[in-house]
Image (cartoon, rainbow, N blue to C red; front, top):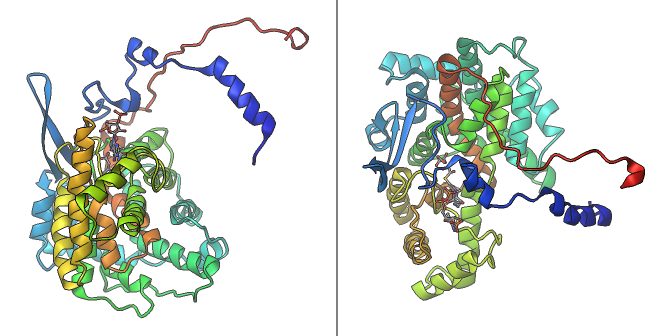
Length: 443
Ligand SMILES: CC(=O)SCCNC(=O)CCNC(=O)[C@H](O)C(C)(C)COP(=O)(O)OP(=O)(O)OC[C@H]1O[C@@H](n2cnc3c(N)ncnc32)[C@H](O)[C@@H]1OP(=O)(O)O
Ligand SMILES: O=C([O-])CC(=O)C(=O)O
C-alpha cells in the first residue's frame, strides 16, 4: 500500500508527536530497559539460568569473559560432559525444567514421554500446514502453535503443572512443526517434491530433525551429535532475553502457554535476536561474494566500513553475529561452536571458509573497537556455518532456535507463575500537553 495522503499526513504528524531525546534522561527513562552503563534493568529473579558478561566492582561495570550457567552448571561442562550421549538436549531440557540433572532412569522416562508426543494430531499437517503454507517458517510456527490450542480441550488451564505438561507436548512437536513448515514451503513456493517423514520414536530430537529434513532420511551420528549440541547451547539465556521476557510478560496476564509461546516466536524472529542467525549467514555469503574467501584484512575492513555506513547487505548498519546485551568480551557458546566448526570444517574440506570467518571476526571487532565500541561475538556468528555444514537450509536456522529455546521459555514461564505472578505493568511518563477539544468547524 502506498498512499500519498497518509504519507503527507505522517510527515506533518511529527509536529504533534515528537519526543525530544533529552526527555528520556530528564525523566530517568531507561531506553531498552538498560541502565546508563549498559547493564540491564532488573525485572525479576530466576534460578533457571545465569548469563555473566560483566561484574560490578565498587559500583563500576567490569567486563569479563562470558559464562552461561543452566541451573548452576556451566554450559561448557554440560556440553563436554555429554560424551557420546545422543540425548544431550533432552537432558538439558530436563535440567532446565526440573532444576537438577536426571538419573539414567529419569532421563529414559522423560525421553520416552517426549517420544510419545512427537506426532502431530491426525490431519494437523493437512489442515493447518499443507493448505496454508507460509513464506516465513517463523510465522508458520506461530500459526501452528496457536492451532494446537484448538486440539487441547483444556487449553486455557494455566496451572503451573498443567502448563508444564502442555509445554512438554509443544516441545516434543516442534521438530515436526518446523521441518514440515519447511517442506510445505518448498513444495508450494519452489515447486519441489513434498517429502514427509514421520518422526521415529527411537530417535532423539536432533536425530529426528535431520531424519525428517533429508530426502533419504540418512545422517551420521557425528552430524546428529553436533545438532544436539546446537540445541543444548540455544536452550536458555536468562529471564531478560527478549523472547523469554516476552513470554513472561504475556503470560503474566493469565493467558495460556500457546499464546505466550507464539508471542516468543514472534520476538525470536527479529534480526537483532534469534533471526540474526539467518542474517549473519546471508551477510557472510554476500561478503564472500564481494571479496572472496581468500580476502585480505584490508578488503575485509573496506566491507565492514560499508556495512557500518549502511551501504552493504541489508543497510542496517549492523555486523550480524557481533554485539550482545550482556556479553562484553566473549560468548561461551560462540567459543564452543568455534571449536566444533574448526573440527567439522577440516573433515568437510571447508577450512578456507572457517579461516575466513575467524579472520572476519577479528577484523570486525577491531573496526568496531576503533569506533569506540568494544563488542563480543555472539552465538549467531558461527551457528550459520555449523548448520550449513550439516546441510540444513538457511530458512530453518531460526526455527531450530525455537525448537531449543522452547525449553527455556517454559522453565521461566512456570518459575514466574510460581514465584512472581503479578501482572507486568510498568509505567510511561506522559510528555505531551493537555489541550482543549476544538470543534470540527473551528479547525
Ligand atoms: C541470540 C541473540 O539474540 S544474540 C544477538 C544476535 N543479534 C545480532 O547479532 C545483531 C547484531 N547485534 C546487535 O544488533 C546488538 O549488538 C544487540 C541487539 C545484540 C545488542 O544491542 P545493545 O545491547 O543495545 O547494544 P550495545 O548497547 O552493546 O551497542 C552499543 C553501540 O554499538 C552498536 N552496535 C552494537 N552491535 C553492533 C553490531 N553488531 N554492528 C554494528 N554496531 C553495533 C550499537 O548500534 C550502539 O551504537 P550507538 O551507541 O552508536 O547507538
Ligand atoms: O540474551 C540475549 O539478549 C539474547 C539471547 O537470547 C541469546 O544470546 O541467546
